[in-house]
Image (cartoon, rainbow, N blue to C red; front, top):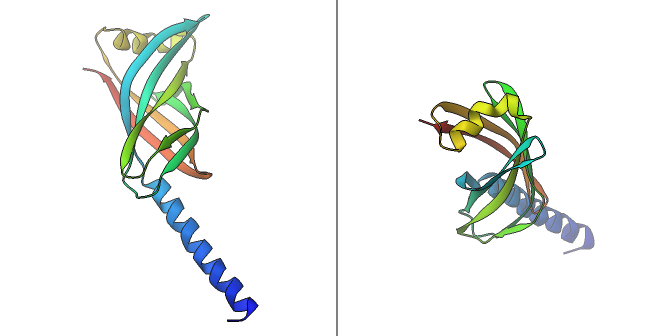
Length: 147
């Protein structure tokens, strides 16, 4: 095999590898975990929660970062973030701690009431992305708080 043929073959193999890695990162399954902590940073309510990420692939991923917006009733009420890498081995799951920083109290008072044991119901939508081994995978989750 000449040099050009070898380069083409390596390019095809590399392309297939990255295509499969991108597809595998998009197949990560995410669902809410436990609420770890709730506190105020000045007048700003902050929730620390776990995001459970399941990896059904044979390939391990390092989730380097997660960033997303949080909305309720069509209005943005906060942001979610984690910038500490977490390794998710192949065919397993891991809990990723997230920091949910909410808007000032007036906008999220009903949500705080539900989380701290009050009555009511609220749909929370989280949209953003995560970086898994340099590949951006979308996050689009809806949670129902309360009963």
